Length: 221
Image (cartoon, rainbow, N blue to C red; front, side):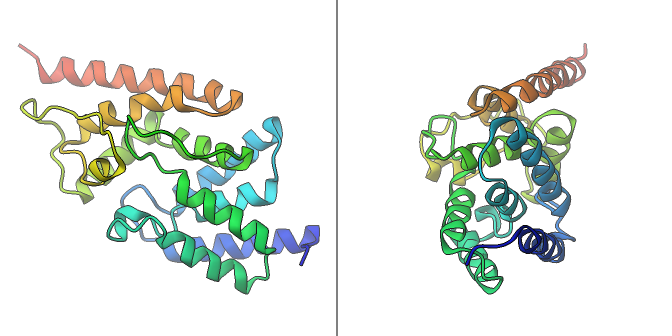
């Protein structure tokens, strides 16, 4: 069926309630507030870049509903939940398919792993998600997840790796600081849209300043 404007608005509101219920107590940085920030960012980017707003809003809200990191590495875990949830709301099947594809493909899968996303909607959601991994919020999220994953903050004896495959990346980094060099510092140059690239610049610079200060304190003599 084709949703009316009011129908789409109602679906978005129900989706927000669903995600908040599912991720409200999540404490790894992949929580309801992360989903809400990504949702706000995709709306900002889409206004400047185009694309189907309804699709990007749904994908933004639902992109971490069943992240592979918390589902035994199953990359399609989220798509199954999303398909069932949106199906009950009678969302158009093509939109459900698009949302599922976006949420399955947007995740970073290794510094040397080629990107798969081709649609404008997917690129917008991917940029918004990656922007939330940069800047002050990105740093907070990195250490929040690091604590969950029982990673050391930093260990100079452990060198970072540029993962050549998703399988390698799934095995996880060894320290939270290494995560900056294995993922976060690459994101600025992986942005898909002009708007995403513009927003990423300042946040990337903040990461670099933070690391400079971190190592200054670590190597104090």
